[in-house]
Picture 1 (cartoon, one colour):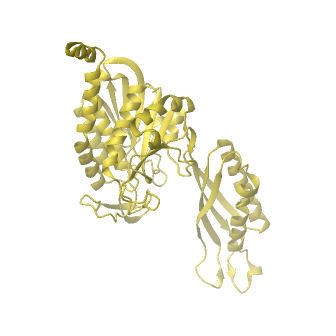
Picture 2 (cartoon, rainbow, N blue to C red; picture 1 turned 90 degrees about the vertical axis):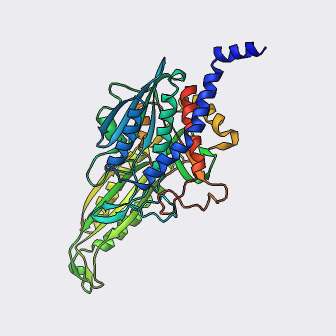
Picture 3 (spheres, helix red, strand yellow; picture 1 turned 135 degrees about the vertical axis):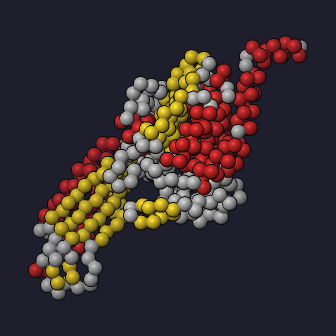
Length: 420
């Protein structure tokens, strides 16, 4: 009977399955070393030179075909399995944020850099260091088990997810523009993001729209300077700006069908004048647009320009207005989600997979998901002894990651690939 069981395990690959699962467990220590190294040496968007070298060196050591310098610092590794099958893409983003770390860790970042002309601290305050380390671990697990890989994997280490600086291009959009999927187009793309808003061992996933499209806008209202005691002798850009701000709020409250999909238009900064009794020549404002429907997005753009122009005209002011189009809506392909959701349940359990609702944050994984069916999910990293509802959020200088949760990211990617 024992001989028959051993024969069955050999024939049906049970030993091989056990081997790859053991390799996942064994990679944890190394993965955490990678994560801590990257965390201690963060780099801003489009400046991920050392991180890219670190990743490329690892992928080359695994015998992969490696291409570097995509979208400035992007790295792509190609791993072919021993059996024929589909091409799948796995993605991790590499950039850090202009945030000064305030977490008491032995590997806390002390790095500084220049951002928008000012000296800043640099921190992996969004967890991209964990994404890189997780994907490096997945690469090693599959490189050591190509007999368990029916197909080919494209490991995408992407720069500038947080947005390219200044007038530079970058991120997923630029990688695609430079031909990332031109010669090798994946059947599907998978991505994850750690979050402090969920406890460790839980993931957030929903089919269809998941994260908002994002656009930024900037405008300058140009009036005519005059003394504050004689407002009739000039054109007041401050009053005009106030009217614009109030009128713009009607775009969502009165001009958008919010039963179809939610949307937000917010002003984030306004600057004009310097003295209490001088009406200035101009006022500048910046803001953001978030939505989950591209038709609604187009209407918001139209209404925003229409209101700004006409309110300015009514006040005899002029306006310079520009919308900087950002990331589109991040959509999880329904058919892919239906097929792969059981894989996530295998790793996290029925109670470990929750619907986080629509998220008004944005992600440039959306560009990949516009090209091929995409599946993107959030993974909780707040430890059990902390309240995830009050934990410092992503982008906070106090953002903290429960490292014991990271191996679940490796398990999830491996499960998704094997089941697909």
